[in-house]
Length: 129
Image (cartoon, rainbow, N blue to C red; front, side):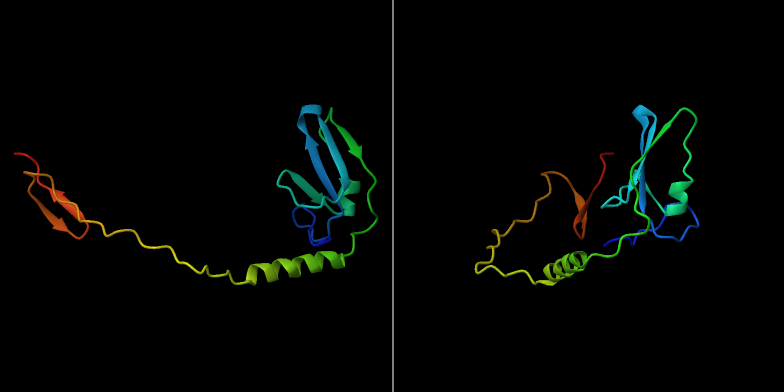
């Protein structure tokens, strides 16, 4: 939904309006409108931090047009969320035919000449003296 995301700067509680992305190969920082989805390699910034952005020496900053305030939540976002919750809550249909169990398995026999003690599903084999 719209601008639920907060500024990535520590201790900043303001809503994010911009997304910062670094292009390391070109030594460029791109600051643009808030991305649709949060990405782990991008940083969301509030208006104050976006305005005061500085980059390392030798880097360039590409500033795209930014909105003056955080976007309002869109009703379509709320409807999409409600549809997703309904879809997740829907019970799966039970098929008419259940899969048939495979044949019974015979228990494994110990190798010939191997004396051992059986403990549940484990077998202890005595070593050769």
